Image (cartoon, rainbow, N blue to C red; front, top):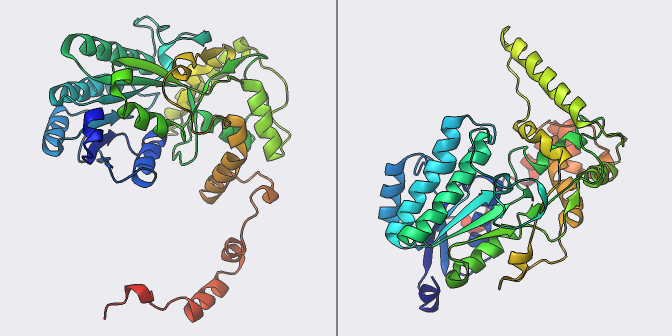
Length: 383
């Protein structure tokens, strides 16, 4: 990778999972914030399905990339078959292709492969047991196989574990954004955690800078696993109350619900929803609730290995708290436009005049546009 860069050859990469928050951020970064020396392609699932080994082999054989990045994951609530096919078998087939082509393979993994505890290092993984949930089990199996392939077939890979990811442009309401949505929608009356419970967070905007760096420094990062997390963990209750403060809401109240009661409530809702399906009403709990226990247990990842590497944080002062104002405006605007929420204070968003007119006087907008804004763009006129 380094030798190719030094010869000024334009590098071609393939990104799997480009529609997600992490994948989309990577695609945007390599398209707009890097030099013309790197071209990153993000084929849709119609062109390349990670679940199909033939698709992988045919596409990579035709394109002949210089590196591959895999950010694809099955939804965390997926059944065993889909989790296995996407998170494990897909990872395996991508790695086999990368090994055959002798190119770097960048794999994005998750803190779900780690136990609870404080300051966990990269080697503190869970044991693979049948009782692990499908998501954690499949991601952990993928990590183990990549380690094996590095040792036995010379796979040049780097595994990057993310904790709770935050950033703009997440088209799904999940993870941190599910938490944020619950507060904004005032559907969290009290705190489903206890004092002192902390977690690590991963900044989606910083992530592409790290990927770019490790692609250009393969000797240092090959065969390694890194925790890509902010240096300072965050107390869950404090974060929730800070979001509440930004949104100028009264709930959730600072009342801590015991885990036993929260677990009982979850079980009750599951039974209720199961009963409703018998009369034709479908409903599901957010898949994040499979990690309900983690709301009551600390899990913080050590960033020491990352800090001791040659990577330099491009935004050292940016964290979940400094990003909150921008996240509040972005997601409130998005969710309001999608009619998902309507309980916020209007002054938070400062809606522009045209959106107000669209709501109350669409005929006036139409008249104005017809008078002033329908002429062809002059710079595109064909002579």
